[in-house]
Image 1 (cartoon, rainbow, N blue to C red):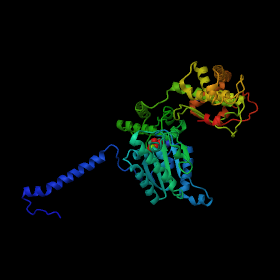
Image 2 (cartoon, rainbow, N blue to C red):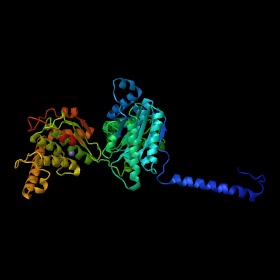
Image 3 (cartoon, helix red, strand yellow):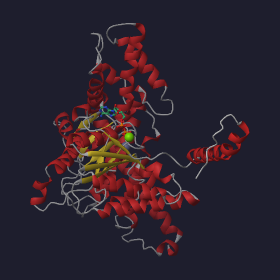
Image 4 (cartoon, rainbow, N blue to C red):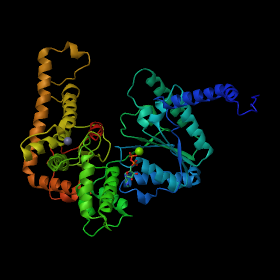
Length: 506
Ligand code: ADP
Ligand code: MG
Ligand code: ZN
């Protein structure tokens, strides 16, 4: 019991009674604040957002990702239909792509369109916590979601917890315990169809493979930076509530913003409105967009905005791949070719073989090399010089040529395979001979690629111009554009491909 002095006029008695309590209180507050300010402790990273905020129509472009996620909404709203047929509803969907491309936005749209409760947390906050706390938070997050099902759990920056890269010391252990808890939770609600986990990560390759196993994040959806059409759609979404002057041409803005993400574009629209408002105009004008663009792009110093010159080189490089793929017939059919950056690649050609085959002839492998080398060849032909843009192509080609000589016995000089043990036992002559054979094969493929592209310079120009205009071309568009260009492959009877190609598609 605390006795309160009756005589409040007696200052000394008052202090004597209250001072210790006051000091204690101050001490407690100080301690508590210090603890809160300790670098590794963050406020609870769990956040529950109200539903109904993001609709599908707020997400522009990203059609493939949207289709995939609309299915998730169906799982949540109509799961009987799937369960009746014994379908196992996926538990985890992983969205991967560069920052600002709309991963969080997509997850929110799933939550609001499905009427599910939305729980979001960032994995980086978990692993920064004191020992054991990260794992406890994960447990709490999943418990809450289960209690309030149907629910979506969104875990942002998944690579922070599930990265294959190892940090040092304590961080590492905490990282592991957080990851383990996450795996336990993912495995623990196999029977629950009304809780779906959506993860987001900038890079797929950095993730611990354990996270990607069946029953965990087994659906992976690439969220790519927008192409021209996508950027136009995003600009439309973000100008919906902004009155635009008649001189604003969103297609033009889209053209000027190659390489930028949805977040950048949203930012540009907002900045433009701010410029306009400052000037006291009633409508956002083209000049406001110009100013906003300048400002936003200047603020991106560290990030790449592809210059027009680079774009031209990229367009020819990828057009080289695409045209050669066409010339080689069915060997490496192009699924899509684009000059929009993805991962480390500034542009890429995505091949999709019609059927899985396991046998391939020497001629076919040479064709594959031609397709892979055609990017470099196109640069050489059109610009008279080459860039560092072909590094991964060359890696691919080297691997194929090496396998041909060292494993498949496809060298003209010696029908033999290099056994692992041979690496030490081989004579220097044999080693040199095989290295030469490998180089010859590669050079031959490259020369052929250059010859063929020179011969078909007009279609090469056509595809490159089209890529510059639309940034992405799919298989049908390419086929239409090249319908009058015949095949030039020597691999008349195609027996097989793949394996190699699958890797080539990366
Ligand atoms: P991420 O999670 O991939 O880093 P966000 O979803 O947080 O990106 O995107 C940030 C903001 O950028 C969004 O809130 C939205 O305003 C805008 N944005 C990004 N992508 C799109 C898109 N495809 N359509 C419309 N707005 C987008
Ligand atoms: Mg995000
Ligand atoms: Zn290439």
